[in-house]
Length: 99
Image (tube, rainbow, N blue to C red; front, side):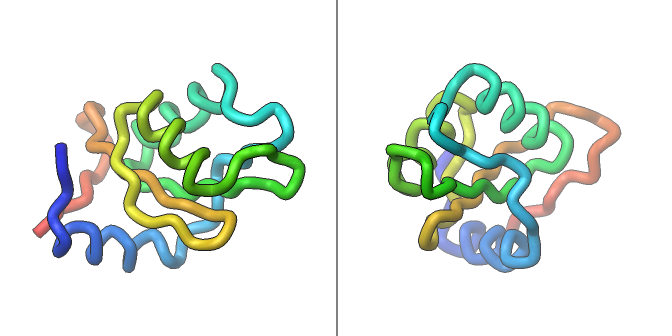
């Protein structure tokens, strides 16, 4: 699912106020990080992640790998943080209405 420019702008504005829920450290991206990201994406659809200084990955590399392994879209990468979006399959979650 490719996001349009308008949808990315909308998601960026929503992600601005979020705190990072996934921290990527020196273990880089392992199965535990992927599971944590998947759980948070199912619950919230939009998450912010942070790459710690101890990681060997840049924020862009981490975003690309995690998005690929989770089936998510990269919304934005700034500094050592990035945001991911994936439509949740849960019925009890308030879905983000994209333009």
